[in-house]
Amino acid sequence: MENEYRIVAENLNLVYRIRRAKKDPNPRSLHALKDISLNVRSGEFLTVVGPSGCGKSTFLYILAGLIKKTSGNVRINGQEIKGPALDRGIVMQAYALFPWRTVLKNVEFGLEVKKLPKRERKSIAREFIELVGLSDFADRYPYELSGGMKQRIAIARALAYNPDVLLMDEPFAAVDEQTRGSLQAETLRIWEKTNKTIIFVTHSIEEAVYLSDRIVVMTSGPGKIRGIVDVALPRPRDEAIKNTKEFASYRNKVWTLLQTPCERTEKVERIFDYTELVSRPQDNAI
Image (cartoon, rainbow, N blue to C red; front, top):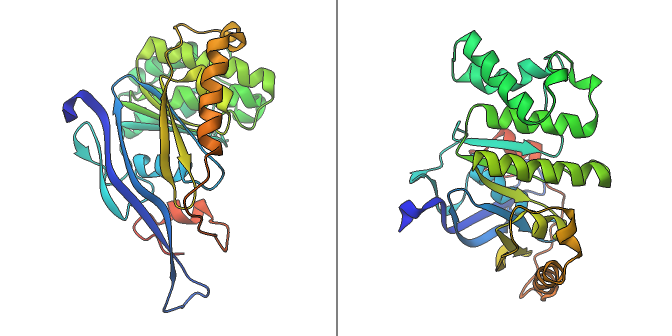
């Protein structure tokens, strides 16, 4: 039944209208997402992998309420998604911290939106800064932090206002391999402590297997779900699990699904500017 799930997507479609000129009366249609149906359990860690341009981030932005679907249904806690809301937190690849705010003030931002009293905001913000291991940096500014530290603060900010769902769009893609491994371990530790529902987009098969309860494998042209892999590796997990035969088996399953030929490929004649799309979610025309 639906109440068993935190997120329910049914026959979700997104069609862009591509104009060759600003006033083109006959824009071409591009099916970016087609018939996406997916149920996500409360407390589940679910990753989404697929080739570039398959719609992974687009699906995440629909869940965030930043892009409007063309058809289908998508609900969180039984409520239809109609726009951004505080029941969802989002962490993007580019950190998106406010450079004029200290670490503490960045983490307080969502709490300010919720209009919590100042003393309560500071207390909660410090709790989550401690959770990501950066208590000594609460009064620093983003330019004083490393890339990995900035991403930890972005995670703390997303968690501080207590969303039901945490959406993560390739959050570790811009950091070095050693830092990436540290952030993966930190994310698992935080997830196990907070029991949040996490949807995590990545290009890395290894990262997906290491983090996930389930892996959704997408195919492009248009973006569809090719298959779902249940990852039954024991928890808690550490780096050593990546050297096991079981880990290799799951990695190969995902790789095989990714290599399955697409039924049909639609060529995109221009690169989509997601900044443009997110700025006007009410209209999917370019």
